[in-house]
Length: 525
Image (cartoon, rainbow, N blue to C red; front, side, top):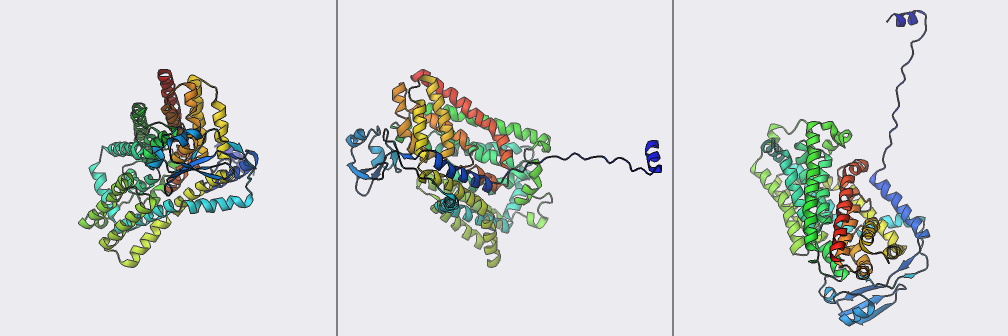
């Protein structure tokens, strides 16, 4: 103190304490990431050689097989097993005639280098628009979902239901996370819940927040658990079934290995969520998304003040609205699994329930329409993300570099034997998952080319199918070209936060999946 007084008396200003500046790196948004990847894909079309395999498809109208050469010349063949054998496609003809294989498949040994098809600067934005148009079905579904959420929010049913639920689950909060995770794992392994999973966030996120959890838990219990189930698909028709058909085997082969993998994956992901939730409850600042907690709570209307006593009344009208809202989701799953529904039908069913809730809510017509529009507009960003991701795939397809990458992959593992072969294939599928994020798309593109390599190594083809599943989906946990960015945009979560949380699960899938693949090779090889 004396020194300070002396300094002031001498007319000398006291030393100014310097504040340390922290360098803060702002990670780009999902739109910027996809824009950058689109540019890289366009650049790749200049340097990666163009090429293509011949494609084979079944034409139901004429009952014939059509083979399209790399140059685009189409040849029709009788739809017989002999025709398939002559082309080198070792697949049962019934897989085509029954409708199990609807997309054109690659014909082994037909890859040819073609004239380069480089994309230009103008193709960057054209591909973004074209991808959005191609994804119109899922985008309409998401917008209708947003409108449904807007109407239910306007009715006050969400607030009243959450208040009643938090009272009943006091002290047993993780039970709901456990149940949701189990259901998502089962949905993933049986019917491949992926794009459809976005429908569950609006109903579950406010509940998880009311129970004291954060956005990481929301994505973990829905997206991560569902993806873990899809990774170890047992009877998923969009993954293991179509891949087995394209590989010339049946999906029941290797089923026991996938069941064991699915059980192990479910235990690991639920255990991981339990560890995270326990840490979060002990110290809320442990949250990987702690810095964004206020903004996230405001996004889903879970302010600390809670609903007023009048709003909190759980009337019969609100209960009926919530029952209808929740019923929309099992109806959707039933339609997809048993009725062959896709996004237009799912959107129509959600729209029908929305109209019923509009009449039941008692909200005046103008307010109801405004609520629908506001809800739909809140998910415009999510729907656009999906369209932009599709645009990246269009660039690679039109630049004719996807088949080249596949040809390089098959050449890379050709001649290898035993465990090294299958581990290299796992890594190849991991990177191909970034290039072709569609499970069915990668299956029909790669299985006819890579599955026959199993014959040269002396192992069953179902092991190649397992490598495809576990490799591709390890990538889809974090690939910007998949559904990750759409999910994170919906919850306004930073990609870096998600990356920190999900990387241990990616490592688990690759290590555990690799160990099971080596075991399969040693047993059956």
